Length: 339
Image 1 (cartoon, rainbow, N blue to C red):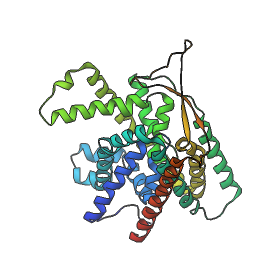
Image 2 (image 1 turned 90 degrees about the vertical axis):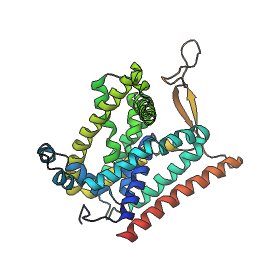
Image 3 (image 1 turned 135 degrees about the horizontal axis):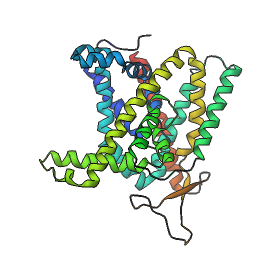
Image 4 (image 1 turned 180 degrees about the vertical axis):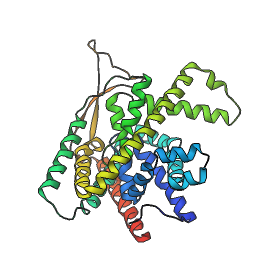
């Protein structure tokens, strides 16, 4: 099967931008993996192939000024449209998603829960025969996923070397379906710093620059956040190159075992988007509420419960789950129809 497409129609490019928006939005939500969007959207293999081409040969072509050859070699058209969508999502859809989660978290998480359940069904269908090795890898993935669920978030750390490492680690959510990069940032303690504060600072600078207002850049805090964002992006690029090369080799040699591990990861972390949970906030020794860097209450843990069918709101959440399931099956059906 070919991993690249020589010619893309305008519709293909528009759909690729939409997939990028979906991928970027998924990457922003702790517990949801952008890699799942790539897997179900039918462009995971091409994505990994393109990332793998970001190597020494690509750099040589770039520094020699052979930009057309460089773009062709790294599958530049595909990456530009896809990551154009990712960037759009970070300054539009993901901001609306943040607002929606604050207003009605259960319904939003219900949609994601439904999407993940449907994704699991479709990925399981790709396992041709269940051997002992496949079952073992599935359980190993499950154990790692469950372990991540119980991991306690660390304190926020803006040291640039640590931020660079955060970029390398968090980008795994794009290359490994089932592993949420934003949740890893949550565990590392830098979710708010890197996906909220820094993104908002960049958005503020860019939006003001459109009106030729560059005053924001003079704020020392904003400048620091922009540097942090730059280092985070650099770490993410390095992580993409590293993980994509590893995943490419693993997928080529052991596709079924890799899928089994992915199924385990997804199953192990699915409780992160369980809609029926209550936030339990953190208090200090004096009984005062502990706040994070944004002034919001710090979450200590979640109390999970079963749906209460006597509550009418429960049925709204169930409908949102069904919506998520339908969305994934429609995307999968349309993707198969086009191929």
